[in-house]
Structures are given as structure tokens and as C-alpha cells.
Image (cartoon, rainbow, N blue to C red; front, side, top):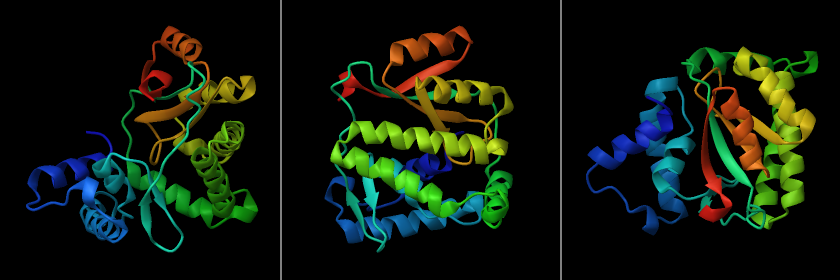
Length: 219
């Protein structure tokens, strides 16, 4: 059916009585809601942070601070470029979250032996986030390139085999950058580009479904 976070948000919106209005929630209310949704989403994974369903329910960019607080965030994507877009690529493949989460956890334990360096990954992600908030678009793409390249090198089980070359071409040509959605392994891949018409044409020629989720004209 898709993202467990989106499903939980939809169930919460449909069946919970006296549910809070997303527009009226303060930081404390969002933290409480996140914790409630974490209990619901744990049905799928065993554990959950509650972040994904909260994001889906709020329908607004959220910033999660290190001290546990949550706040709405203003983002400044490069809207001056009319060909900039954030998009999804449909792999057409089913996936199972649990086994790939276990792969991630095992590799994170062995970062010194070529595994996943979680702190480095967090640093790359935070750079991209801070660049969006500050409107530093050059740094944003530089951070995305680093993040995309790191996932390509260290998350190979999570990237479907038939999409690894497509992923690498984007990095090599500086044309687009891709990252995983959730655990990867199938489902959708997330992409960023400042030449969406060209990227969409390239991928659709390969028979891929490309879905824009943010474009200049949407801003």
C-alpha cells in the first residue's frame, strides 16, 4: 500500500476522535502526537520514531531538534530556477522494510570495517537541511551530491540492482541526485535536479514512471 507513515496518518485522520488540528498544534502537541503515532507505526517495524506519520499528518516541513522539540520550518528551495524539481521514480518493485533495516543496523555496528558511519551520514543530512532553511542552494546541491554518493557506496543492498547504474549516472554527470525513500529495496526513489525536463525525458525513455512532487511553478 505504500509508506507505513502515510498509512498511519490516514488511519489516524479517519478514525481518531477529537483529533488535533495540525494548524493549531504547538511544539509540545506535535511531540505528543509523534509519540502516539510511533506506537501505531511500531505495528509494522517493531519500533518507530513517529516522525514519518507526523510529517504526513501535518503536511508541512518539520524541523526536529536534538533536544526532542519539533517546530514548523520554512524552506527555501531554489525556486529561481524554473527547471528545479524534487521527484519520485517508481521502481515497480515490492519491498520489505524489516530485513533491510536489519542490514542497516548490522552495518552501522561495523563502520570501521567499511560499514555505515551513522554520524557522517547525519552530518551530510544536516548540511542539506540547514542549506534549505538558509536558502544556500549551492551548498544544498553539494550536500545532496555527498549524501547520494555515500548511499550509493554504502547502501548497495537497499538500491535495487536495476537502478544502480541510473543512480550512478546522476552523480557522475552532476545531472541529478538520488536518495532512498525509507528502507529502499524497491518502492520509490527520491530525486533532485535543476533540469527536470531533461531528467524526465531520459528516464521516461527507459520506461520509468517519474512523478514530480515539487517544481518551480508549485512554489
